[in-house]
Length: 503
Ligand code: KIV
Ligand code: ZN
Image 1 (cartoon, rainbow, N blue to C red):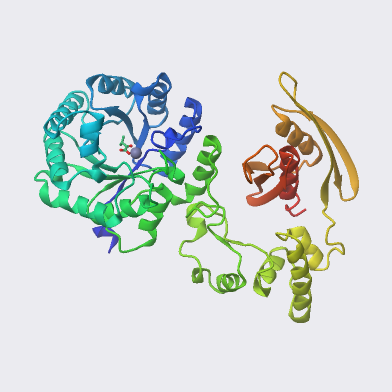
Image 2 (image 1 turned 45 degrees about the vertical axis):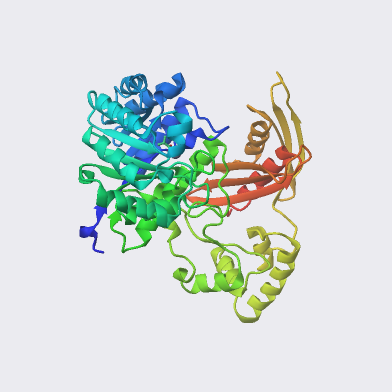
C-alpha cells in the first residue's frame, strides 16, 4: 500500500496507568514524569497518566505530567461516575489537551456480578457518564470493559448510544485476554458494519495478554478498522500484561502492506524499554520480541554465517531501527569460523587460512570450557597473550560493612595488569559503595546503562546473576557474573564490562 493511502494509527500509551497496576512496580511522581517525557520524545499520541480518583498519588501524577508534557493528549481514567469525572477534570486542568477516559463493564458477567444491573441500565449509566464528561471537555473516550466477552449485538447498542452522547473514541477492551485474533477482528468488523454513527468516533483496541494474544488481537483490530491501539512499553500491565507498543509498532513498520502508519520514533524503543524495566523493577525476558536481550543475538554457527553474509538472511528488523547499536554475534562453542573471524576483525586482527584454522581450534577449547568467550580471550587466541585465563583486571579482595543504621562502606583490591590496587569508599548501599571503590581504581569514564540482578531459583541460598551494560565513547559493553554473594557478582560484572573497553 502506498504511504499516501495509509491512515494514521493513534498510539495510546498506558504504561503509567494499566502498566503501573503491576504489583510491586509502583512509581513515584518524579519517576512517572521522567518516563512521560521519554514517551513524549518517542512520539506517542495519547498518554494515559493515571486514574486520579484512585489515590492522591495518581491525582498528583496526572496533574504534574499535564504540566511537564505538552505534545501528547493526556488521558485520565474514570469509572462511569460523576465524582470520578469531576476529579479527573480537576487533575487535567493544566493539560494542553486533556481526555477523560470513562466507561463501564458491558459483558453479561460484569452486568450481573459486578453491577447487579440490567443491560438497559448499563446503557443509561454509560450515556449519562459520557454526557456529563462532555459538559467539561471535548475529548471523551468511552471504554466498554470486557468488550471481548460482550455479545456483538448488545455491544453495538452501547457503542451507538455513547457516540450519540458525544464519545469521540470508543475503546473495546479484551479485558480478560480471552478473544482469539479472529474473534476480536470479527467484533470490530461487526461494529463497523452495524453501528450507524460509527464514523463519528475512532475505535480503539485495548488487549490483554492472558493467552499470549494481546499483540495479535490488536493487529486483528487494526486490520478490521480500529485506528487507535492502547499499549505499554515492554507489554507490561495487569496480570499477563497488555499489547506491547514496540511489537505492534514494529509490525506496522516492517509490513509495507499495512493500512496504517504511526508517528513513533522507533529508535528510542530500547532506551525506554530499559528505563521502564529498571524503574519498575521488572526484568525484560531475554527472548522478548524487539527489546529482549537476545532479540538480535545470533549464536548458532549456521545463523551466524548467514548473518555475516547478508544481515537480512536472519533479521527482519534492522536493530538500529529500534535503538540497538548492533546485532550481536554471540561466541559460543556452536559458533563457526565466520563468527570468530568477524570478532577478531572487530578487535583489529586479520587472520587467514591456517592461522584462522589454528585460532578456531584454540577458540573451541576456550568456548567449551567457558560459557562465553570474552574479547580478552579472543586477543589471547589471536596470539596477543599466551595465557587463556589471564584477565587484565581481576577482583582479588572485597570487604563490605553494611546493615541497619550503618554507613555502607567497601574496601576493594583489584589486580590490574598484575599490579594490586586498593580503594575504600562509601555509598548509599553495599553495591554502590563497592562500585564507588572500584571506580576510584578504574577511572575510565563510563555510563551505567543497565544494572540487573536476578535470582536463578527461589530461596535465600540462591545464586544471583548480575547483568551490566555500560557505555563508553558511544560503544556499549556488557558484563556478567553470577555468585551467591550478589555484591561480589555486581563488582565482577562491572569489571567484566569495563575490561572489554579497548585500551
Ligand atoms: O482492561 C481494561 O478493560 C481496562 C479499562 C479500564 C480500559 O484497562
Ligand atoms: Zn486494561
